[in-house]
Amino acid sequence: MATTPPSPPPPALAAAAGAHNVFVYGSLMADEVVRTILKRVPPAAPALLPNYHRFNIKGRIYPAILPVESKRVAGRVITGVTDEELQLLDAFEDVEYTRTRVEISLTDSSEKMLADAYVWSDAEDPNLYGEWDFEEWKKLHMKDFLAMTNGFMHELEQPESKTRVETYESFMQQHEQPAPRTQVEG
Image (cartoon, rainbow, N blue to C red; front, side):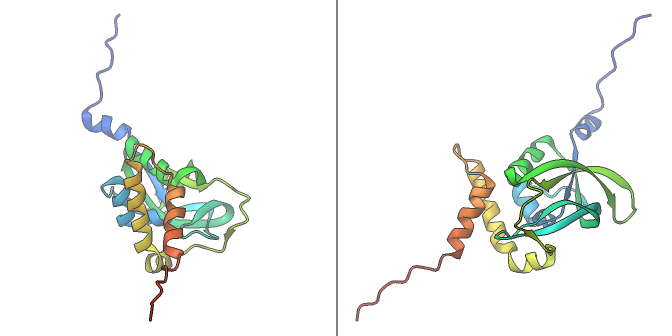
């Protein structure tokens, strides 16, 4: 008996097949940052990542996560991220992070699900300390971080684009330098 090949999935299911869940825990918890990178804000829900810790990074205004037994990181899961958007997030997170599949639980329902998370690449980094605070970041750094992110996205469109780390370092150097003083002749 001959079998007929399966018919292709309906368009809605085919689109969903390429959709990713991404657990975010730092600057990407801000819709404005997500919109700057993805040109939209996908659906998101509060989520917890067990057995990880969110660290401050010396000399940086964004956090890192690493596995730490009995700790947990509160963040959000962004759903429906396309393959192309995941590539943009990979470029944004750059070499400092490794995209890793993790199990998270939704805060509202405790439902468990798999998601991609960007884990700090250097588990032995001596520059990690304390605990990063999103609310403090929003008050102190979000405006500058959005400006840097806009610069990175513009740079990404250029043929010889800089990495996100290079864009961040260049931006921070420009904003930390005191303005040149002009001599007044009198």
